[in-house]
Length: 157
Image (cartoon, rainbow, N blue to C red; front, side):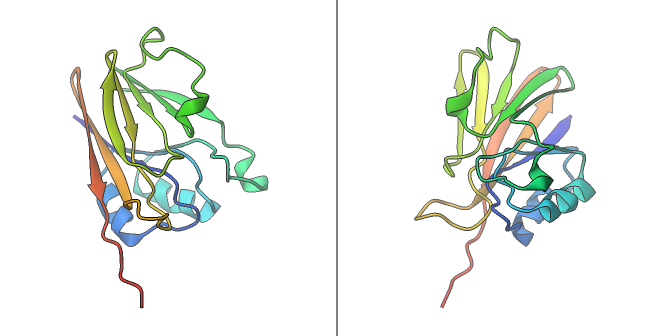
């Protein structure tokens, strides 16, 4: 069994609650809009890290980040992209079982045409009234499942 922590749209803020959920992951995927290279350093200390560049990831530190990444975990192919609207391939035809994206800040798990689409939402600064969340992807043999993990939002005065 593989447990993959999914995070996106940190925008420079890596909450302790997100780190707690990601602890114990076999791998972490960050779907872009990281905001600061220190976040990647912290995540890479938790587990092997795959990351894509988001539309707000600028500067020299972000130049080495690719817009998409495709990886295999166990027998499952996972494609990572920041904005699902930029997806330029047919995942099912390409043999991809999971597409991980971010950008919208809206957490979502949806199966379509044999492909599981997962957006962990935003784990960074809260936007409007959207939840703050990360997600978990579990791969066990040929079975793939995902769940959204809501994070508590500290009350501000």
